[in-house]
Length: 225
Image (cartoon, rainbow, N blue to C red; front, top):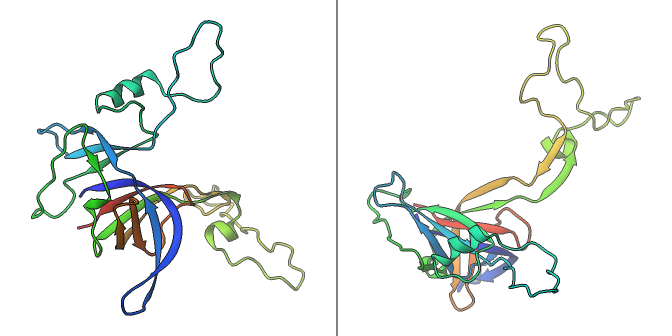
């Protein structure tokens, strides 16, 4: 089904006509340009959408210093130029169009089209993919919700993982053992969320509940069949 790339603004609340308070996540999704469309005979029907804009290197003059900072590559500029864009998008995502019910007609797009929040309507069911907040290196209590050891009776191993494997057989640590390590900063998809409000003038989506990621994090909102 069709989707759109957006930026998580934060959370707020809205009220229904009956006075019911609903917590919602606000997603700002400016019109996404279509940069690539799969071939008609391809196995998957999908399009490539862009969001934001990269900085482009300006024409340098003799004796002029080049400004610091990352600039878009020539390959990215050429790819965006095919869609009529002066600057390549900062974010590219591929959206499948044929993963919905067979009875739903697959929409058609061509390079240069735009996809806006108008594809959604209040009451639509969506799934939102984002990147969770990163927490760095964490122990097993925070990373895996271990209970920890006793706090009294001489115990000195309050938050340690304890034994990680037998020494005789198999004489190694089993793969997949829950251990301390990097926590967060992973892709997460929240399904069965409801669109409560669509503000087409300001390119805003109000989605019921919470979605993964920090404020200003990039999310992909897709219709769910």
